[in-house]
Length: 98
Image (tube, rainbow, N blue to C red; front, side, top):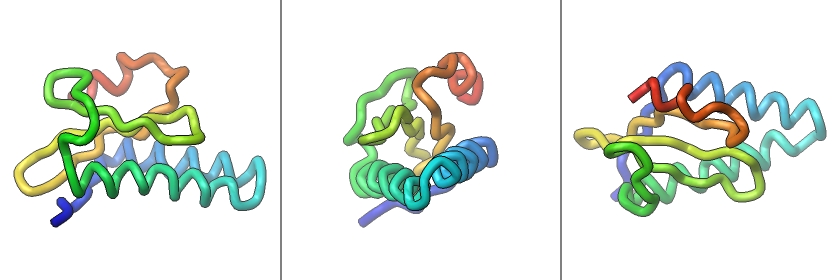
């Protein structure tokens, strides 16, 4: 059984903006990015403890093939996505969302 995935607004915006950016660089690349992030989300929803804790109860799933990580928390009956975050950005940005 997989948990429902809920995005914070800022995380959804990061995800959408990154997908758009990749798609503008090369047709189909945005879809590849979305699929790679979705794999992380699907795995986390199926097994929330799959990825390591990095700050309190926040976990980090590395997006294969892209310089992004998904940061999430398991909450009552759902997975809360805090950030879809480029690895070159200051981590204090996503950490302030906890």
